[in-house]
Amino acid sequence: MRTHVPRVKPDGDYGAAMTGPLHGFKVVEACQMVAGPLAATICADLGAEVVKVEVPTGGDRFRYLGHRVNDIASMWAGVNRGKRAVCLDLQHPDGLAVMKQLVAGADVFIQNFRPGVVGRLGIDEAALRAVNPGLIYVSVSGFGDTGPYADQKSYDYVVQALSGLAALQTPPGGDPTLVRSIVIDKVTAMTAAQSILAALLVRERGGGGQHIRLSMLDTALSFLWPDGFMQHSLLADDGRVTPAPHMADGYMVRRTSDGHLALMATSERQFPGLCAALGRNDWLTDPRFATLADRETNAELLSDLMSQEIEKHRAADLVDRLHQHDVPCAAVNPLDRVHLDPQVVHNQTLVTHERPWLGLVREARPPARYSNTPTSLGRHAPALDEHTDEVLRELGHDDEAIARLRSTGAVGART
Image 1 (cartoon, helix red, strand yellow):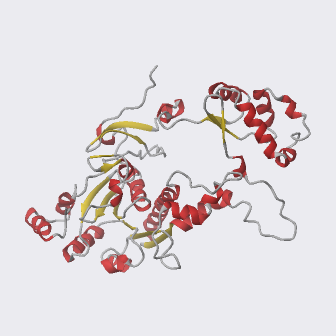
Image 2 (cartoon, rainbow, N blue to C red):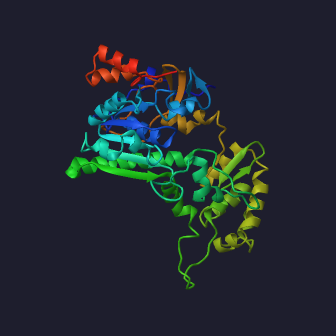
Image 3 (cartoon, rainbow, N blue to C red):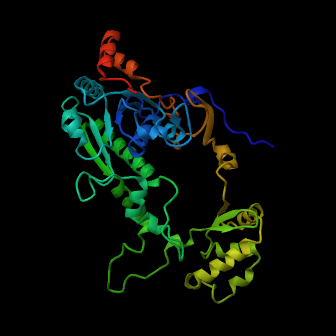
């Protein structure tokens, strides 16, 4: 039987009004890759008007990475939906003038140039605040504005290595491993969006505009610290610190007879249910596993025994049995089946719709559901230079002026 997957109207309208909580706010984004652009997309998902400024020669280089249709890549579309795109040559005085005109009517400006570049281009905080005193100016960097790494290129995998995230993924007896997702880029984007909302709230209360600076490295450490560094936070050396296993040691996927399963069930409340589901109630009286402390002492042995038992069962059967005993667990969904998971379908987390340029697209809807200001996936990810003329007209330029700007190379894409 085919599972129903939500199908929505063209270009992101799945029944929600296009007026999220940021409706009426305007964001100008001059970013490439992921962290900065995704921060702006989160604002767009929340209802803000977002204008993306790209260089005339090819635009955001992330446009062309991965599976793509009509030179628009799926990853780029995922972190740039909801925006209008313009091409401005900021090294041309007329292009810079248009940028300042655009920012003058904005609430937020986001940039992720390497330190020093915005000053050379004439779009540093002082230059833009001169045309918009109330502006929320956001600088996203890899390592910060200063310091030994400030001038180095930063990518997600670099920060995973520096921040300890790769070390945290080290399996017993193995080598450090990268998380196979651009997790630091994405959490930096979420942190930037959260910071923007807080700054807008301050401004609405009369606090004025301000400059938000955040780096991927700082964000990664803040994100990782509570659990990732749980064994490196309590520094008292007078015997008060009681050592304990790292919770990451229990984070593993176990093989079943037909797939894989994730579970952690060594607590006093969950361990009896695990034993019952596996038919191993003898573990409850085994002195090696009788208490939580015993199970921590013999964690490696218990883990090996659990894996041996779990491998005897089909994943679906064992999940049902474990759930009957109130043991949290889940079978590992293959990537091509996640959209068919019953809870995902029930929540309507993923929607399928037609997008200009791309055709039929499956996307995740914004996760927060607002009762009074519903959000939306908004407009499609824009083609390069798609909205330059439209935005220029809104700024007061007539067709003759636009043609002149294009002829000088100040605006528009160039091959």
